[in-house]
Each structure stands twice: as structure tokens, then as C-alpha cells.
Image (tube, rainbow over all chains, first blue to last red; front, top):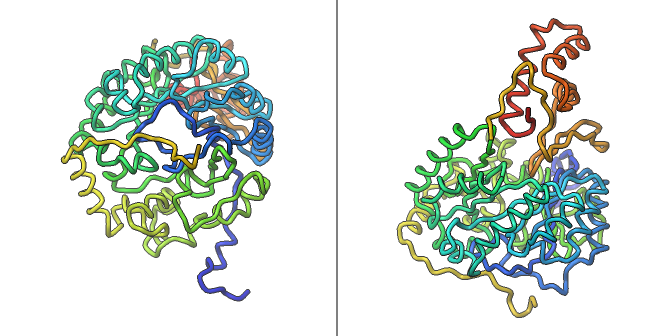
Length: 378
Length: 94
């Protein structure tokens, strides 16, 4: 085979492709909240482009046949889709394990009962804070916290397992100990202490959200203590802001290895932020089968395996632990999608990225751009 | 809620919303849980299949010792350690 300049080395074709384990369905980008840390793309997709019920059902069937084991119904706000219980039931009938990722503000007892009856196993409710004032600061939606508590109670009553997703910014860190209490009060068996990851709207608002290194150190101590104290009662997942990390995160278990993301209009992505990578083109389920896209789609092939990696990554002993970190972050912070993830201490940009985060936290400028549809997206 | 602890009289079962399923694509057993999954080895699968919420741990260990033709003193500590770990991680309850 002749080498084509600029094409990946030949060994890239030899990467073994395992079936995906999980699929995240962004059923809609519509949402009553306007969270400043939303991980959706800044260019949101309008309702008129959304996949139909039948298209989602067909996709779920294809996913199960391909090897997907868990499906996450997300958004936007997935409960804004009236057909959500129908989709949950269809997923369950295909043998998929179902999770709901919701703000909770649209969930009443009747909806919780319909979802449970359809076979929903688990719901994750996002909490931007545990005070109304702090919650509204992030969501620009008054009265949201009370509705979240009501949704948690309704889902619990319906028999759905609960996770409290406590999203951490510098504005709510100090209430972390109380967040563990809230998690237990609402009957969650699991809490994610999830520092904002800076993509989409979150990246746009990074300076208004980033915690300080002192806050992070304190937070880590609180989590360590709570994990020991609550072992066997409350599972605690902890995600730090990786600008302060030494090693990059293994983004979704590696590009094109375990996970795929579906946008409301049916674009199949290796991760939810992948559309920021303008060098790639993404396939739609309206044009190709899911198996074809997973196995042969150019976007999935682009950063699968290690052929794309810069030298320092390809020879790194951790390359099959973190899979080279995050391509979207490399683009956002280093200007090149195939650069080292700057959150890795091996990156020449590591120190400057950390310094930037420290400066943003110290400057404490809290102007936020709230999530909104552009006119063309409506 | 009491902390989960495993003893001879425990009657372990999969926690609510935790499912042991055979994955026909990969031809192996998998454990599904909220936003998590486990790929148990063969021994763990055998143990989990016994966790029906009715069978006491001592009986489970006897049964596995017979199946594996191994002494209870050898099998027992491994099974207890495995279940204790799975309890602490929320996959199994007693």
C-alpha cells in the first residue's frame, strides 16, 4: 500500500475495535434551565431537527445489537420529550440498562411513575447547589431547587435508584459537607462530586466558575473523610477540575473505545464535545447504520488507538490508562486537536494552564453568559 | 441505614437496580448498576449467581467448595472478601 501524505500510518487500520458499552442520547437540547456550565455545544440544535420517536427507537435497537449495554437519556432536558417513557420502554425491551440524566424540574409524581413503569432503573439529578440562591446563580431559573427535591422524592417513591450529581464550582464548594447530608436525605445511594468540566457553555464561563487550588485541596480532604465514613451507604465518585490535575482524564475510556454520543438530530459523536473539532466530519444515523459509523466512521477512526498520538504520548507508559487525554481540551487549550492534553504534566503548556486557572479563580469575576439558543437554531 | 457487613448468616443479594446479565454479544456475564458496570471473572459470576437473598453465606460457601472440590477454609475467605468488597461498592447488599 502506498503511503498517502497526511494520512494516518498504516498500523492505524489494525486497531482492534471492541463494541461500545454505553450510549448517551441527547434527546433534545430544549431545557427550562439556562445553566452557565452546560456541557452542550454553544450552537444548540433546535426542536425541528430532533429525531422522531421511531428514529430513536430504531437507533436504540441498533445500539443493543451492536453491543451497547447501558443507555443514558440526557439532553438538554430529556423529560421535555413527551415520548421519553416510550423510549425507555423500548430500550428496556432491547435489554438495555436505562439511566436518566435530568435537572428534575419537569418531573412530577405522574411522570416518575410512568418512567418507573416503563422500566427506568436509575436517575441522576443535577444539583448546581443546595441553596435556592446558589442554584439560581447557575441556572437563571428561580425556584428550581425546590422542584429538584420534589423530583427526587417522586422518583424515589416510584422505585427508581437515585444519584445526586453535585456540580462543583467555586461558588458552592464550601457547602460540600452538607451536600453529602442532602444526598442521604433524598435517598440517593450514590453522589457524584463533579467539578465542572470546561466544555461548551462551561468553557465559555470558565473564569466565573473555576475554584481555587486551596478550595480543591479542602474539597479533596472532605471527600476522603466522607468516603471512609459513608462506605457501604453512599458511593462517592469524585471528579476534579483537570486544570489542576497531574495526569489527564481517560476521556470516556478512550476515543471510540467504549462510548458514543447522539445529538438530538442524530449525529453520532465519539464524545459530547467532539463537534468543536472542526477538522472532523461526523455521520448521522439518518445516513448510515450505527455499526457502520462505529466501525468505519472517519471521526471515530481519527483518534482511536495510538497512531495519532504525539511522540511523547505514544511512548508514554500511561497511554493505555488515559488514552492520551481529551482531544477537545487539547484543541481548546493548545490550539491543536492532536497535541498533548495540556492537563498532563508532560505537556509544555501544563504550568501555564494551571496558572491560568489559578488567576481566574483569584480574579473572581462572576459575569456569566447563560445558555441560550441562537436565532438560527430555533 | 446500617453499614453492610458480611457474616456467615448474611443472605446476600444483588442490590436494588443491580442486574446480573448474560451479554450475548461478548459471550460473558456482566453486572449492570446505575451508570456503572462490572465485568466479573468466572468465580465472581458463580458467587453472584448464589446471591438470591435467601441462601445464607455459610451455605453458599459450602456449595462453592463442593463445586470447586476445594476446602471450605480455602474458599470461604475469598468469597467473604469478594462480597464485602461488592457490598462496600454498592453492588451487593445483605
